[in-house]
Length: 93
Image (spheres, rainbow, N blue to C red):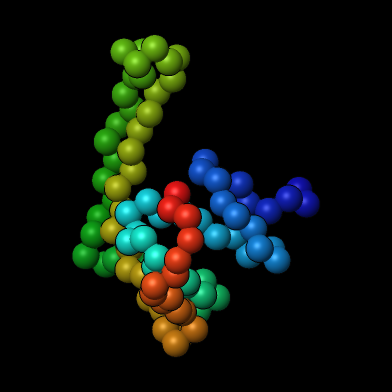
């Protein structure tokens, strides 16, 4: 496929870089992470846990859902490539 990754929530693409809105982030704050230097590793202390499959018929859907729980460590090898912008003004979403 020639298209980029698709997600279940909308984003804003600026020059091919996706920006995602976080409703829990304080107003006027932007946090940027350079994912080139960020990796996720499975924690040695956490085990896989699977909830099993459960029916969604009580919600009016013909499907089943299962939850996989996994502990991961997020490591940024070059944190200076990220940025936090404070005090940006404009319309609230």
